[in-house]
Amino acid sequence: MLDYTSLAALAAVVREGNFERAARALHVTPSAVSQRIRLLEERAGCALVVRGQPCRATDAGRRLCQHVDRVQLMEQELQQALPGVAPEGPVRVTLPIAVNADSLATWFAPAVAAFAASAPVLLDVAVDDQDHTADWLRSGAVLAAVTGTARPATGANSSPIGAMRYVAAASPAFVQRHFAQGVGAGTLAQAPSLVFNNKDELQQRWVRRLCHRHVELPRHVLPSSQAFVTAAVAGMGWGMHPLALAADALQAGALVALVPESPLDVPLYWQQARAASTLLDGCTRAILAAAREALIPV
Image (cartoon, rainbow, N blue to C red; front, side):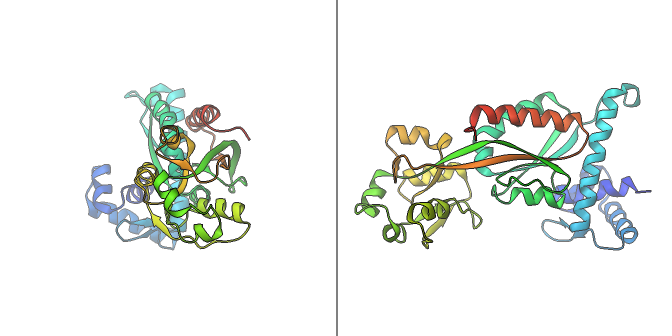
């Protein structure tokens, strides 16, 4: 049988990022956590944690962490069905989710906030590009994800939830300075663009659709959805802005579209592990309801 005391230690180390914080969360000493991890690795016959800053789970470790997450969901559901087994009340369980930054900055946060306020849950939200959040689910690091990938990960369900609309925009002064001769491959190759990180392909996707070929874009890297709008208004560069975040600046004239009536709609999907859990199902209902209100139907 699996040693769930050791599995809890593994999950705590991965969640907290190091042995000291994991020990505090479990109310034990760091040496006790280290011993439990070592015993678990001996039984598994492989490394489960990559020691570092922060500590990371190996592939095998992620699978065990996902198993712990599912067991905790099942235990929480049992406590609700049989209150006598937990007279002190249901224990909050951690629910790991991955989401893209623009969804988190707009419609996603209010939805999960309302859900967390009424459910015995602690949300652990990871942020990544929408084309990569499915990898978190596939690896077992999370139990659900907002993703741009339609094909479900193994052992997961996938549901379309709508499309997020993006607008290529910059300040009027920036447009006058860099695009007075029009928006095309030549001017785009010279005008600084804004990207969220090295995984962000939205700008390239829009340019490829406009120019019908690849254009190498000079770029500033700004890992913040809100900073995108602020930096663009200040004239730092042009970027693909979620319409929900840029609407006020566009209406006020602080931002203008590079090419009017040329938005980029990015379809999004909700993928969740097939874990029989009313808690996860409740989170799914909250996400789907919020997406119907905020996103463009596809």
